[in-house]
Length: 302
Image (cartoon, rainbow, N blue to C red; front, top):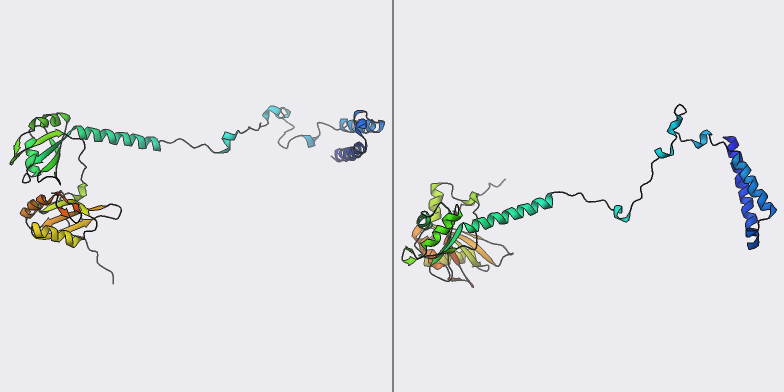
């Protein structure tokens, strides 16, 4: 090892000497080397030829003398050139977006199927209940849902009737012109599906079902109208209001309300208020499928 260091140091000194001599020469000396430069280069060659290529300094630390075949240049790892595309980590594909697309497609397919199984019924007498309307169409097939709505442009009402299959909906179209109450109903294919009601809001007992017969669902209420004004509006026309729930936020231009009356007759009269101005908007009134439950008050801690 000392011999190698000594030879190497001599080679460095000789190289520095050769470099200084080359810098002092002109361009002609580069193309036509002098005897001094020839002597220096030859001396360097002689020095390097004396180096032992099998010296332990030239072998990796992992090399074993017992297994000299390990020294194989093919065993050294070759650095992999990275392209510009590999400078950023590749995003792993996942099925999340694909699952969302499939869920969206499944929802649209389910919605379209529900529309094909639904009919739109208009010119319904205001005294006709949902139960009576569903009974009329029960002969066409199994009725899954029936939703009666107030028409702000007429004293009559309209409804959506959903069947368990498309055959029931097609058979229901033949009932157009049937007298129901004092008016013949019109039946057409529906362009929309019935929005499902949150099952937690549906009546849970006979008392709550009775409450629904005394309750109406109001939409398109002017956002500037207060709860007291809504109550006064219905009490002045229909009768005593026992409970009222006004809902809405600043994100929507209108609000909704559930109005419970003391008498079921008052709720029937309230259906005639559909289309009347309440503030600056015509209110829409429909029978309610959900009761107005009393608010749960939590005891305060002292």
